[in-house]
Image 1 (cartoon, protein in one colour):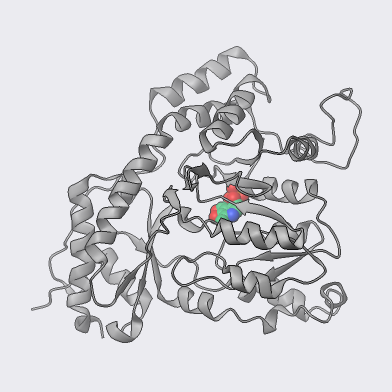
Image 2 (tube, rainbow, N blue to C red):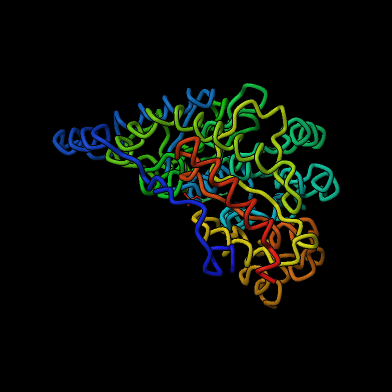
Length: 405
Ligand SMILES: Cc1ncc(COP(=O)(O)O)c(C=O)c1O
């Protein structure tokens, strides 16, 4: 008789997982108020959200934009990053972390990640610095804060900027301070799947007034805060958020703290339940991460011990009623966009002799792409007994893994 649900056995979890986005009368009333005010364009709601979100993360300034991607591009522009510059990024991330660098005419240089954090490895960052390096973009993957002490120390020694890709880390804190203002600036996404959402949207946080003003100018067609309406001081774009989006975000923000704490407590239950399970390698939080806003819960598989692929394991876990996903399956540099630009004779001179993405190797990232599973943040909003069912499902798949071979 098979035991695993994927083989016809009984499923472990019969939980109805929370759906996303979560919304109620707060969103409805906020949207209706904007509708009826007739003021739909960038105004009081956007400004209120910028202030409140910056305060939530402990930053002084917030500049919103149409997405996490566009605000990252704008932040790099505002920092003066451009042609000839190199920017160090991790390869275990969404494409925007690196494409924002290319969109500014600069060159992303990949540094490997750490297996125990899934975030950029400061030692490899240090190895990748050249006289052309201008910035580092650590990604706080799934809300896990990259080692900002070491990264800021390395950046300081080489006069580099640090731009946090905080697009997974709403509510995360490093030694009591929120992500987004730990380096020069940090960007967040409010796209539909994110822990606080307006469908699309993004924000850059910073303690640096000059950077906030530059970034705002770029998002507002090159206007200056003290300039006239039709005076444009730089080549900008229109990346403004609408009042409708800000009304949604203000409503969503009212739940963010409670949701963050609930996800964190639930994630801890899962980690405790998986810690000593042979075949499973949990990602333990660095004690300097004083609060973690989980975008997803991740854990690694010991593939040698289990004797199955990660994809097969994920299928079996999903069949048990725990919707798990495989996450990023290839390091970014193996994406066709990077491989093809390296092979393009028109593009090669731009990359120079040193950079050929077809030759890049980040062995830890390659391993992580093959052995890591993610469980999305919505699951972490279920109740405590549901977390014990998640743990039981992982135990069951591990204990009966031979059925998958
Ligand atoms: C790590 C990371 N950076 C940047 C982005 C870009 O955000 P957006 O989708 O709002 O453009 C995302 C979105 O998924 C992301 O996951």
